[in-house]
Each structure stands twice: as C-alpha cells, then as structure tokens.
Image 1 (cartoon, rainbow, N blue to C red):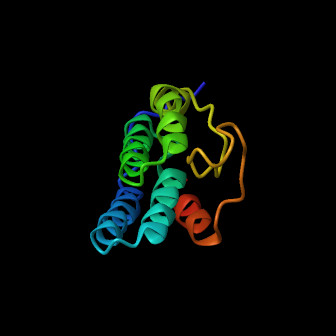
Image 2: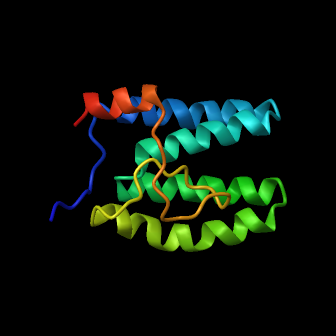
Length: 121
C-alpha cells in the first residue's frame, strides 16, 4: 500500500493557482467561478491529505458564505474523512468534492487537469 503524504512539487503551482482563482472570484462576488475553481483544486489535491482537507475546509467556508446548509452539512464528514482516505489512497478519482455529488462517486477528470496529473505521475 502506498501512503500519500506530500503533494509533488510539480503539482503545487497548479493547486495554488486554483486557490488563487477561488480568492479572486470571491472578491469579485463571482460565486459560480469561485466554486468551479474549488472543484478543480479538489481534483488536483484529492490524493494528498493536507491539501485535500484544506480544499474541503474552503468548501465549508464557501457553504457558510452562501448560507447553504446542504453544503455545510455535506462538508463536515468530508473534512473528517477526506484526508484519511487520501493518506491510504482510497479516493474516488475525479470527484469534485461538493455536497452536490456523492462522496464516493468517481467522475471524469477534465482533460487539462488529466494532463497536469499525468505530467506529475
């Protein structure tokens, strides 16, 4: 069994860029784009416990900001379990991480993110 602990250095700029775009879009009150970039950050980070958990934290904050009890309630178990699942390599590949999708559902990874992840495997 392979334990995932640290995000590869080559992935970090892509992860940080998505989070930066989340922040920029929130500042412009463009909630739809902010969420889009949170989902992308989740896909990039989901194999790595710290970064994966951090994205769920940001999703929880987003849920609070938009006053979505569904998102807030949906993020709590993801926050508690997501990082552990990453650590032991038990993640639903491509899952976007929001309460709007089942937590264990595998999803298609967008082509550009697939290229980023393949470049780093």
